[in-house]
Length: 140
Length: 151
Image 1 (cartoon, rainbow over the protein chains, first blue to last red):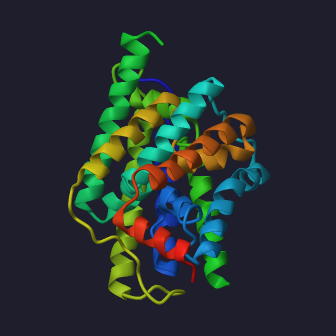
Image 2 (cartoon, helix red, strand yellow; image 1 turned 45 degrees about the vertical axis):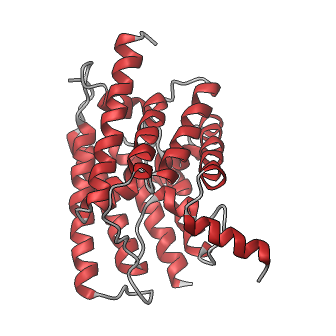
């Protein structure tokens, strides 16, 4: 096993969970990123303020992190066409399936939603299979 | 106003959590998905920590009944498993595995790896809009009829 970072993984995970818990306890809303973006585009729901603020927090987090220390290394090893195709599939799939890693994974599993259990199991299985094919079978 | 501040704080903490946990690093996400290669199990712990705290938060929110800054809890209540859910999740999983990016980390990386993250986010928003155009739900169709008819 390579690059296993159990302490920061657990700590960071608990921060993500705390953020989701805060949004629910304070605002009564689910911290599903694709759902929050979805509410801002397409038909306006009149609930744009908190959505835009949540997304702004997500975008600005690295600037706050930098005040405390240097950012962790990030590897984005993909060409522009690959990034575009991946983004298109992620956006389409998340909207069609009513959620992504945060909405179904973190929030949905946290309340044992049957839909989120099925969605999380499905996207995990497909993602693992895709990496298996791309990295080990197709040699891409 | 308070609701905007609390949402901003939650977003900030969410983003910091993505950075601290390694979830914002597509390389690490792909290493987690690569179970037959040099598997990095860290993301199991990210999910475990996140789900445990989120579960406690849900219990607390439900026990209180009413959120502190809003009039009611908006928690999805559907329980049916339909083709949209499974198909959407499968398409999402495929896209996630191509680069190692999902919506939250893509937004957080906008200030870290701007060119790549912006490409991904633009395509992601286009993908979301396509669902509304190609496969609108009954609810979407009603809303668009209403908006065409004017207020």
